[in-house]
Length: 256
Ligand SMILES: [Zn+2]
Image (cartoon, rainbow, N blue to C red; front, side):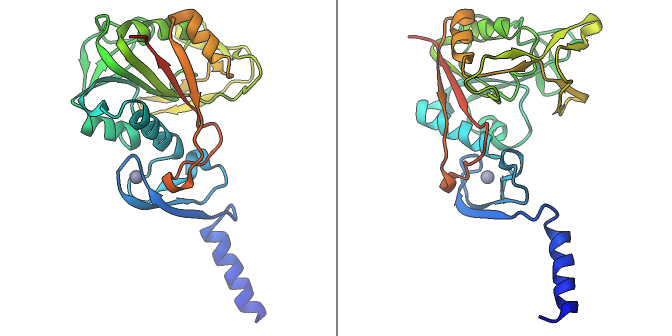
């Protein structure tokens, strides 16, 4: 090949694919219910392998598939989602569930009241009556709580019998014991016990501190704190665009 053309081609590829990575697969999206192309321009598929139609990511599609498999009647349910996004699985639940209650945490406002489109709720001290919901959904929330045991107990309290908390959380410790990463300091600011870590938070420009590095022993933790029995599901199914690391879906069920 002519050296000049080769040079131009390489520069164009560098511009279009700065990480030198591209992957795509045609399939069906469980968030927007369309036949789509899943595409990633980055090898970290967890955040980058997006639906061409609704831009959902693999953990959201895995969450919706698990909800469909465990609770095919979910559209007729009372569902509480804590800290939802405005797209992907949250949008599908909001648009399709009979009663969808989205909540956010605004510590400076009264709890149990509406703040914009959201109920203001502290997951660790909720104002909902007992047995209010068939499903409680959280997506990458449980690694940001200072007292997750209290939150799991509260979620269990607000679940109807036979209901479930279905959630994603990075189980980054895998088979190693869960580690506490940060504790609550004065003024509600985190005191990190390890290297400080923050994740993006759509309602807080400062982001959310990572407080927990969970392992698979989250199952024992939830049983001890809430009495709920938990199953960890892992899906790898390219035809649903579900392929990435750390996309386990955790299902904690309240017995009938
Ligand atoms: Zn989609």
